Length: 236
Image 1 (spheres, rainbow, N blue to C red):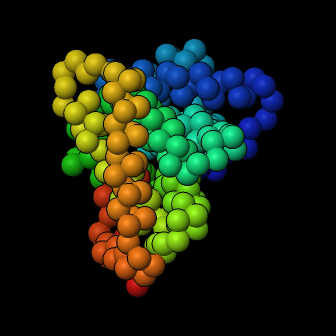
Image 2 (cartoon, helix red, strand yellow):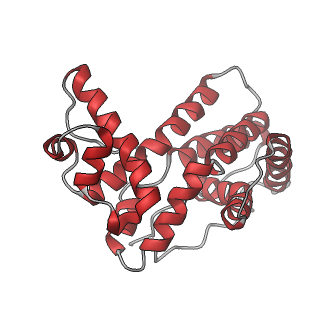
């Protein structure tokens, strides 16, 4: 899910860029996209407007950078999980889902999703900015783990990435939607872990019980959406 940004030079440049992103999060959440200006972000960050534009060409690019930075810490955690000593794919998937639920029910993440949902009908360029980030890294990590599980248990996945995207949506979307709709969401780490283990066990049990080649292919997607962890539509 990485997005290449402008070259950074020097510690001061990195510090100013992070300050601008910190300020942008606050301003986007309190004012919304339309009422956020580069001037306001610059003032909040304590830098000049020239500095803001030196790192981000326009407001859409700044918004995209905010979303991208929010995913980068999750990407790092997922990579660490893949490199950890969790050898069992089922246990590893449980860890992945637990980290995903923790990240996507974070109050700031939920606030950004709400802000995005409120603006996308009037500002379709925000939707395109989200789509431009591509398939999130979590799908790649889950796909690699599912392939490892299929090799260990003797079944064949027709399309590992499609099954990974399905698994992630089944495991995370419901709790995320509950958190989005709740006026005062309560985070329960113990329940999140139990939910992660439950959905992982059910999903893998279904895959393992199918004979090689018996699993259906994923339906073709001809349109895309901005729901997290979806694959791009098929164009062929």
